[in-house]
Image 1 (tube, rainbow, N blue to C red):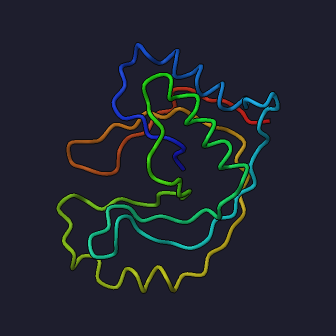
Image 2: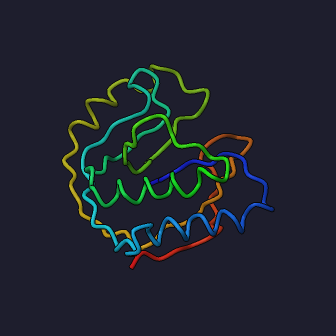
Length: 152
């Protein structure tokens, strides 16, 4: 799950990004956010089923998660990463479509995803600053943890 997408960032900025994530994970109220218990259920796609780019599993909205995400937005805004204009829609990305995929490649996907009965509770105890590098051949990207902060 992504709390904020930063885009291309020069490696020389990593120390300030680490500090911002540490600030967000420690909470402005003086109380460090505790590990989050999140409920995952339901599936969907972005932007739509005719031409999906992303297949996802939904995360039931949770006030503690929303506070953490807001803290991330607040910590990164002074570094030139403005707050997202869209509402936060928590989800776990399960897959991405290749750029050359055609609408007929997704025939039946909506019915298939709607037929899956899945519900799981997970505990999230860490936040990480991740780097994703796209490959010339397309998805999936290669991910690397650049910084790790524990919620406790």
